[in-house]
Amino acid sequence: MRALTWHGKHNVQIDTVPDPQIVNPRDAIIKITATAICGSDLHLYDSVIPGMSNGDILGHEFMGEVVEIGRGNTSLKVGQKVVVPFTISCGSCFFCGKQQYSACDNSNPADKSDASEIAYGYPMAGIFGYSHLTGGYAGGQAEYARVPYSDIGPIVVPDGIEDERVLFLSDIFPTGWMAAENAEIEPGDTVAIWGCGPVGLFAIKSARLMGAGRIIAIDHHPRRLELAKQNGAEVLNYHEVKVREALTEMTAGIGPDACIDAVGMEAHGFAPDNFIDAVKQETKLGTDRQHVLRECIMACRKGGRVSVPGVYGGIGDKLPIGAFMQKGLTIRTGQTHVQKYLPQLLEMIMDGKIDTTDLISHRLPLEQAPEAYRNFHSNQNEWTKVVLKPH
Ligand SMILES: NC(=O)c1ccc[n+]([C@@H]2O[C@H](COP(=O)([O-])OP(=O)(O)OC[C@H]3O[C@@H](n4cnc5c(N)ncnc54)[C@H](O)[C@@H]3O)[C@@H](O)[C@H]2O)c1
Ligand SMILES: [Zn+2]
Ligand SMILES: [Zn+2]
Image: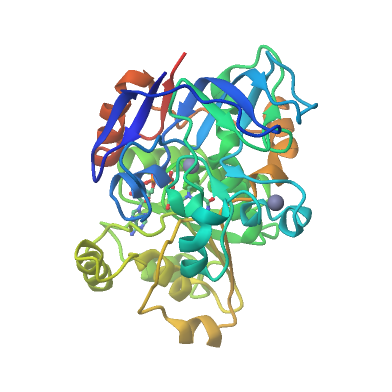
């Protein structure tokens, strides 16, 4: 089959690779009809997440048709259309029992999870197409994919619904939703959201549905800020204003009730702390650019909440830990527990409560994925979300 493979920093290619096979009884093989490129894929493209190997198949946002099922899965049927969560979870361990699916104890094979255990204290769940730190599973930017624990993960979507309306259930819709949930929004709250990429936009949509009174979105790409505005946010361009001062002024000196970091470890901007982080990241003396997280902590009102869907991978410094403690902030974060949210969010799509497609800027065949990565990376203003069609 044809698949998008990783070959080092800023080097992805379409290769012919072996078709996936059923390996375990609970596996299924999915013929992929739609797959998307995520901001998280850019961390791999930029080579700031360790544990990638030459030829790894990328992609963790995908959906398609079930074409083969292992004998251990009695819930799926061949021919069904499913969306696959990016988190691979067994459904029966202690963490899955608590619906903390991205912490699954069984999906990251023991021989692969050592590095994850060293980095984080305990190994995290497997993730499709996301380095050997998360299991080394082949991803879904391909014609076919093997889905482990396929009786737990994939959600069956109704016949006749267009792929693009449900594709983002694989990641960015639940991620934006969990980000807003972690922000513990109360009706009327003011919520500030850094990053108007796909995750930030779904956080905006979710915060609105949860009753936020005001949403203030921060980015510098005009097209992305425009999308945020169309979704009901007031916007700040961080190239034009000092973000913390602007937020303080807009909230009568109080600060936002909740701040959401939908940017993560590759924050842009020329603030001195970010410049130092960027030099350290480039020279491998550091891992993460934490400018946005610092700004969230400083801008948040006393007693407020900071929610961090943005991905961080390593060790940070210069965090205003004093502000965090003294102001009595709560921080909640995590890779999304996708499976937990799927039934509820699918229903919201079917009921027409949310537009899940307005952010898609490009629809391309899989063969053009390398070009799509280049543009999604370097022209974020116009390339807001790319959907690839392998079939
Ligand atoms: N927690 C999860 O499970 C999960 C799932 C998916 C994505 N993510 C992460 O969420 C983050 C966003 O993903 P995305 O797909 O929207 O990515 P993206 O790269 O498309 O968007 C990031 C946006 O942040 C903006 N930005 C950069 N620096 C900024 C700054 N200093 N202030 C304000 N905005 C700034 C960029 O201009 C860009 O528009 C990434 O870190 C991604 O890895 C996490
Ligand atoms: Zn993603
Ligand atoms: Zn589990």
